[in-house]
Image 1 (spheres, one colour):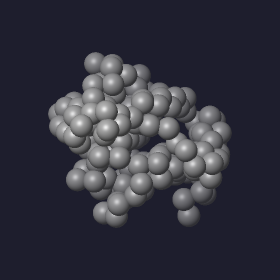
Image 2 (spheres, one colour; image 1 turned 180 degrees about the horizontal axis):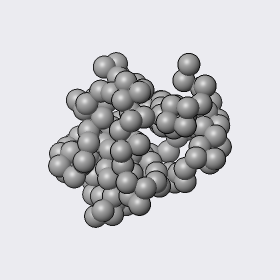
Image 3 (cartoon, helix red, strand yellow; image 1 turned 30 degrees about the vertical axis):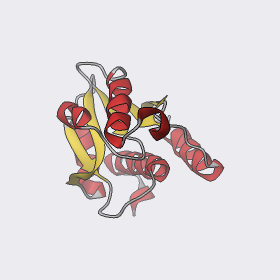
Image 4 (tube, one colour; image 1 turned 90 degrees about the vertical axis):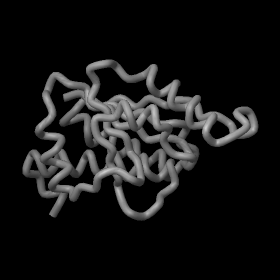
Length: 154
């Protein structure tokens, strides 16, 4: 299985970059992971939140192939335990590219929700869109450790 993370905007905080890079290193032994940053859209330029979300969605959709399995991170999405998330990843085809999409500061446009194979919520709590990146990659790592019967989860 090939994994991709598409994220709107850059990760700016050094401590988040360091954490993300640590989990990227750990994941190399188990899976190929690509991270794509899509430029965020300024509210000043776009004029309103709906236009920001629509422009960001258009940029993201260009990065997603027709056969990619899209998991959209969204606060209204389905919640899974770590064990359920691990089992979910294990069910996906080895030939498929699984794309996790973390939207911008205003959330996901309806275009992305319509394209998504799964909308996933990481928590009932709200996190910054930059923190979600670290939480997501840690959960991917945890899911793979569970799948490979490694002690990390326990």
